[in-house]
Image (cartoon, rainbow, N blue to C red):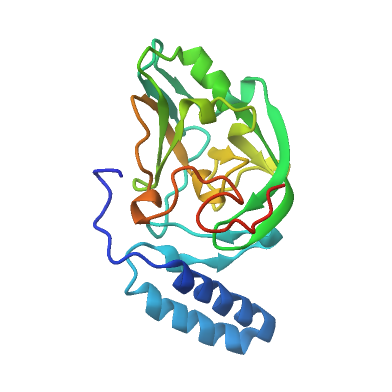
Length: 240
């Protein structure tokens, strides 16, 4: 957990979250009048929810937009930086142009959210996390990778073996377009075989650590190893 994160209130459970998603879908299906009523209900809930989860909005392509902190200020290409540090021989700071100049890898895989929604065959493109770790030179004693984000609150972690998988990217493109701010751009993490909460948005820091550190949602009871179909009590979820 980020020590600088703002105080958080009572966690919002999955049933509440799914209920909010249902309200949003109902509003879209029933037209503007009901949508206004649904938005009013959600606004009332949001006022009591410091986690920011009730900032959920319907989004194109089957995705849902959310932030755990409310509005997040965008980073331009000029002011974006990604740092790589911790137990490494060669700490580094990358601009967006630096990352764009590196070899890019494209992955097409289903995106699966632990709350139930799914977007099949979604392309992501970017730099393999393994390549950034190789460039940094992981020191002896490094066994995990911790991620921080420029929203100031969201964090995630992977084991070093997980981070070195070929299907884990520091993603610059999503659906063959630059990652938008709402989707965590200009740079986000993409961990293809795990539930989408592991794919941290607004990525700003990669740090090699001695052990896995619980991320934002793990502190609320979600699984650290979030393999799709094998964690979070959702063994019936699709795995492809």
